[in-house]
Length: 289
Image 1 (cartoon, rainbow, N blue to C red):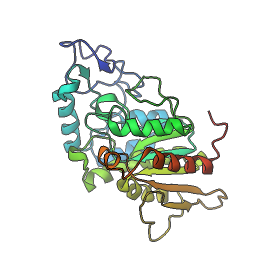
Image 2: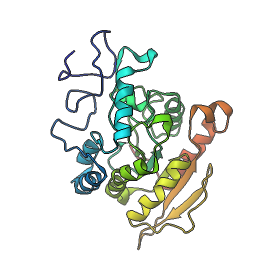
Image 3: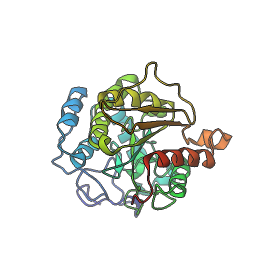
Image 4: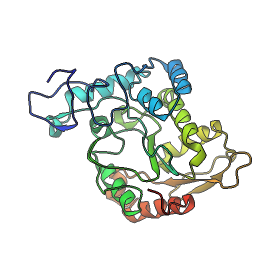
């Protein structure tokens, strides 16, 4: 298969699997970018391109081709070339994972970063790994996802009244981005939050990293953030408001549905359901499609 040909996700005939990341605009389902999408090559260009994106569609396109962090670019593309043995017959996405879901969400779900053989392979955050299996099943049970599974981009999954983002858009080695990488990626989330903030009513932070990352983003979007920052915990809550806003934005902490946490029982499906139902109740999701 030529690199310029469409490269659908999932298994394809062995010997026909391109190596490396999917070039933008070559047919991957739900790829927001084209070959003409501007590419950020350093942290300052992230600031410029995120801040100048005219709408959410263009912002996500620019997110999906970013090359600002050399270590993350090298890692995500190496993984997409070398692959895991169980996925040798699949094309890997191998690019940053853009935000996805409703363009006018009432609930924002924030995670850490895509997994090397999860979102980095499938093209969608929390998709194609065991964390996603647990997460999307809970979202489906609580009315926030159209189906209980999330296999790859273009599989028919749809978020209902919700949007999902990662604080860091590229898969990091050992799932540990550096502070510099977190900060370089932050303007993408800042711009995305600003574009959806008017209708937003709840934010669910999956894990401590996401909890820490969201507070400066909320402050940048004009919300009055409590000082000191609230302590993270499962079910931890805080309500923030913009000046003149009557209905506050509920921020909820949730233990990350990592394989370690779910296997040890630190977080269960019932615990996730409780958080998402709380977020939905505050967001008044009844009737949202």
